[in-house]
Length: 265
Image 1 (cartoon, helix red, strand yellow):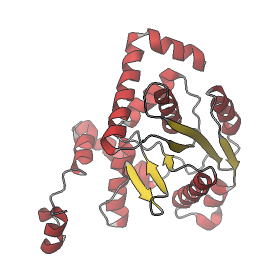
Image 2 (cartoon, rainbow, N blue to C red):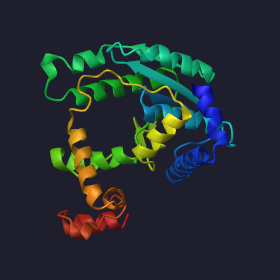
Image 3 (cartoon, helix red, strand yellow):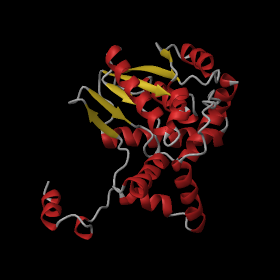
Image 4 (tube, rainbow, N blue to C red):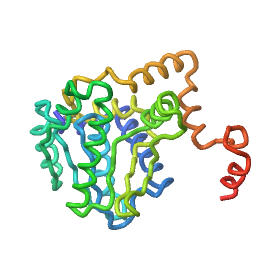
């Protein structure tokens, strides 16, 4: 299926348009935020979903046509739900000729246990992230690429405002451990809907993780809220995203002296 759909992608003009748009927006993010440099060794966190597989596919394809040399290493952390994704992804990685790592864990099982009913997603995400940091060090990767997109950034902003009382979100480039590892999010300018269409039309083998908490999270509440607001005004998502680069500190509750000091930096 993957090969057949991929072949049509280069023939059908409408499909080629989607590929071109996705490539362009990812390239724009890479250049705008300085995400990839010569000699980078990038661990790509692959969950088996449409976003991370699209990211891997696009970064791999891009590596063949740009002068900047970088290496990719996809890593899949199996959460223990017996989803069957490990074998599917193994074949996909091998088809692309990439060195890869698949790690079997019980992270998802523990996160969704009766002892952790309040916030399974937080524990699961935290444990996966720690595992990725460890593996990046083990495989000598200086960067970790994650498949978070524009919708994730918008939703995280509202999640943090509503449930944590702070104005913060995911960022496209984040240096950690005194610069030893850098998180990058090359899909930061792409909407989830467009990534989904791209993944389907490219024939990427994405699937479900089998997580019992899927669709029952605070993020889903925020996603539904944004959807309702967007039906009334389609500019809503774009305006929230632009607001992250248009903060008027003088009109916040930050003390005036601190506000002015930050504006001078």
